[in-house]
Amino acid sequence: MTDVAASQPKAEPSGGPEDGALSDEAILQRFLRSKNQPTGSQTLGFRMVAVSQADKSVEVEFDAKAELLLNPMKQIQGGYLCAMLDEAMSVACMVASGMTAVAPTLEMKTSFFRPGMPGKIKAIGRVVRWGRQVAFTEGELFDDQGRTLARATGTAMPTPFANYKK
Image (cartoon, rainbow, N blue to C red):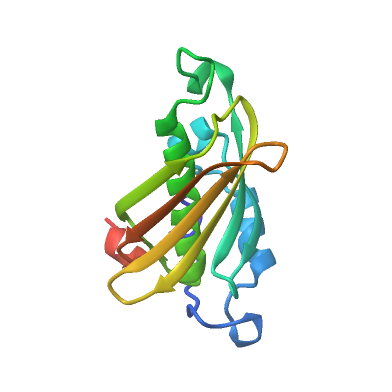
């Protein structure tokens, strides 16, 4: 999960820029400028592309490196595709919270449709329902030709950033 919001000002989950909440563009810029990207995100080649608080969704791009992520068939190992989906859905949860919470994954189901190959992979992560104790998420991965590689659904546990401070 990306570590750009832990030290950021609080914003209400349902707010907009007019009430002091962060705008979609401000959130996107914070991700793009982050110097504290977790090593898992770095390994996957994570880069935020778009944010929509209204839709509780994000668009993410991954740079799948052949030297790190391939199985013996020269395809991206399925566990890495799952990690990409989990990352996109987790970041969508951060956005849905107004950048005030993370949402550790409780369970996830993934369906694979075609092999992932090295290169750019697009992910869409979205929150279908955000509650006090549980969030339901969906994610999709696409290859560079727009073909669906995999889809996932997940259940996560919204947890305020303050609960993670040491």
